[in-house]
Length: 90
Ligand SMILES: [Zn+2]
Image (cartoon, rainbow, N blue to C red; front, top):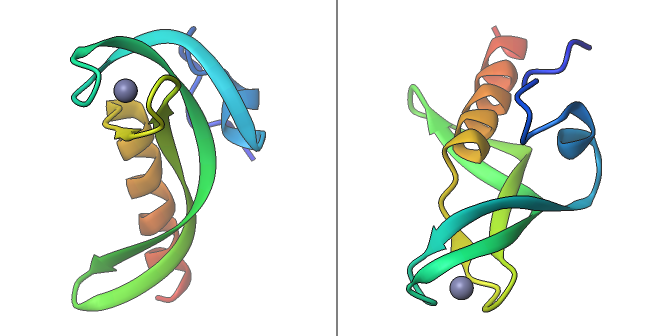
């Protein structure tokens, strides 16, 4: 499978591994600060065209307070997995 992301801060192994620590800082609402975050696999649910799908997505968590933080690339990744699930069913 071709890796979906190949940017410098999100390498192929990032999306394959279980828990990966990223150097890139992201703003955490709880900490009110730029923090490092880890990426974990998570069972996600998404609704597409009226159907709910369960898929294995990713969440990013602040290293300091463990709150989920919003990361564009993680969000994009989850959407892609959700769409793949959707297409599988067609
Ligand atoms: Zn935090």
